[in-house]
Amino acid sequence: MKYGYARVSTVSQDLESQLQALEKEGCEKVYSEKFTGTKADRPKFKELLGILQEGDTLVVTKLDRFARSTVDAIQTVKVLFEKGVKVHILNMGLVENSPTGKLVFNVMSAFAEFERDMIVERTQEGKAIAKQRDDFREGRPNKYTKKQLEHAVGLLETHSYKQVEEKTGISKSTLIRAKKNIKA
Image 1 (cartoon, rainbow, N blue to C red):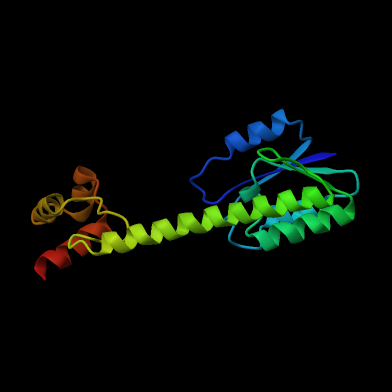
Image 2 (cartoon, rainbow, N blue to C red; image 1 turned 60 degrees about the horizontal axis):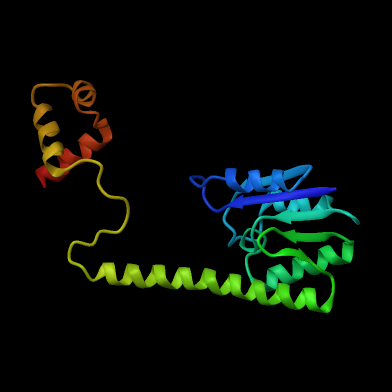
């Protein structure tokens, strides 16, 4: 039987393109999850590995969807080969249980891990450069400007929190925080 596995790292990412590719490939059952690949404990992947048996094929769209690191990829493929399960990575092809197949897989796994590490490194470098700016603020940008908050706090002099919230869309908790900050 052909099983597919699709994974994205965050809840905001979309699985649809992977699911379509796996369906097009003829996967009879597809397991999917929104779970970071840096964690070893991926519940759906573990469940899938537990049901695969001799003669089955595991299909994933890309190598980085499959394993966290080169070591993890090699160990997982070794276990699958020992079970008699074929591994098909769509952007690489069928991973053969032969010395050449294993070599190609190991090299590709190393490149996938290298690429991921380079992305992390570039992100850290960009963040370090951004931190040098005087206006750098880590975290999510403010939803409301200082002017909007001052206006809303001004409205509190003649209106209730609920009325100001309805007029401005600014929540009561944000209004309370803004009021404290303006007084300080």
